[in-house]
Length: 148
Length: 411
Image (cartoon, rainbow over all chains, first blue to last red; front, side):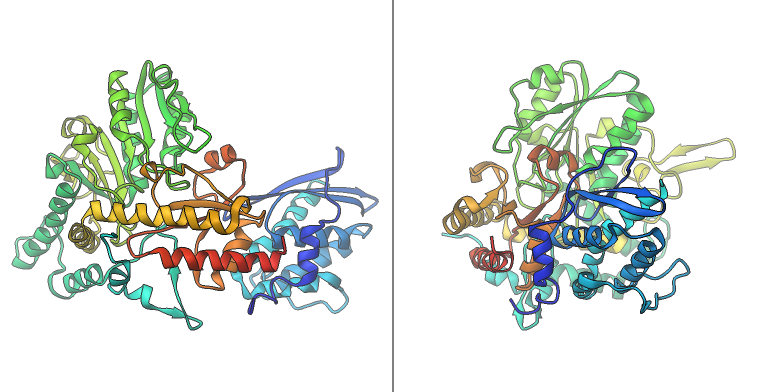
């Protein structure tokens, strides 16, 4: 269907059909629940951190193709990564979603941070209502990391 | 034979004639809010151009003319719902405020720890949260009428649920499934138990002939914006003696007879519950919406929607079989033309995005009815809701657009 190819890229649909790192982690892994009040979606993010490295991550909950694929790709991108790299990735991703920084300024893309598959979500920006779907898991990840 | 010609009616709604990306709009979100006919738009424009002035407080001619227009709208609403008295019609911001007014004013004056309020699993948040607030504040006890498998109220244990209750609050028509409830029977059951009957009629009034006296209700609430009128105004109707006995809700101008440094005296009904400058132009628009609906005839509107609902059920079943779930009753005698649907496991948010490519506007989400969503076992649904300007061709466009969703999600 014309117009939606930018949104529903094949890699997004693939992650939606076969989400990676689905499941739960028992305590002491950090756990946060994110809600999208717009559509009632809920997402669970579990992270295990050791020596400032994300050693394991799992994603639970229900959501649309955009929120589920974003969570799936996020889990792949952050697993095994040191926290500073993860935080830089969150910043880069939210910047791509045109979410301004704490001072309300646009985030300049950091050329040292590679998005990889996550670039496929760039098309979401054209559909402002869906930005919340794409960023839900990322905000939930930040909440979980606050507990670490 | 169809008694309404939706194609002719549609021509009276300027927005529905708009094209987006070269395609006509197929507006299927009227349970959310309805579009406005030219007559409503014109009534508000003319009023603002010719007659706008403060109401109820100035002696000059223009103010009297504006007051007449505002009060004229109240009389139209009174006749539209067959209320006994004009001053039983209270203008609020919307149905939500109307239900809050009852819970706040009547509830705080009459309910205390342990008092029972009975609600249903079908309620909109507007008829749940105000009572949950009273539960937290006063320790009232909530009981819930469950649902049958086909999305109607399960009345098997109603007398037991209502035993000792002070209030029975229920919707006349579900905003999620379109279910129409047996309001008259429910009001009688409430009264038999000594409880008040509070009817959320927000979805019912725009689509059906409403007669509050035949219902035997104590309070009903509805919104202008779902019945072809403007947003910003809603209605609480209550029985005169109940409204008279209630303390005021919001305090301020217009709702007082006298204010002293040591106290105040309330104004008579309806001003007692209408503090501050009301939505004046919006009331005029609501009056014009009532005129518009009366001209069509509410029995005809209902008949038209029965026909569209029957066609939708038949068409969607024929084309998609078990791949589509339509929540709520299949008997069109007990449902309106509002459908929550699940389609081939595609998330409602994705579904509405794909339908939007064909300009098919449906709501995706929890529809402000999260307890009902949990009961249906879903986080969200896509909801297509039809109104007097929709016809069977809109059902066909919806079905075609659903097909294209399958193309993308390949299930």
